[in-house]
Figure 1 (cartoon, one colour):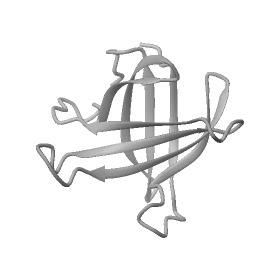
Figure 2: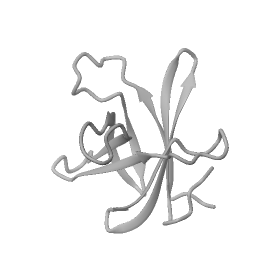
Figure 3: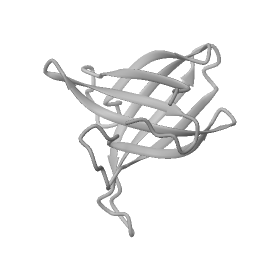
Figure 4: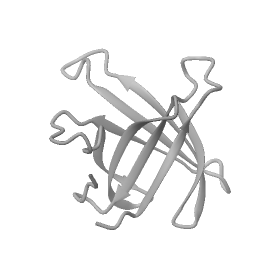
Length: 124
């Protein structure tokens, strides 16, 4: 399966406050440069209390007012260790896409690997 985009975000070692992102980097997707930031969260109320999610904000580097946020839910039924930790089908820039994400340990730190594919075509 060919990805629309695959990228990794570096761990944010400047995180000083709870609202600072866990991961961040600059990435180009389909020719558009973005500042990307990601936060880990957990639902605290309601039927989904305790469920973990990943919130990723895409901010267009050329037009900072052009922002898109995608929430990716923790995958509960991982069958293989290589299966994504988080996944969701969501609209991005007017196109329906599947988002998959993995948190990977890398040399004493962590990175977030993100894959955006056509809908229903999750990478493993």
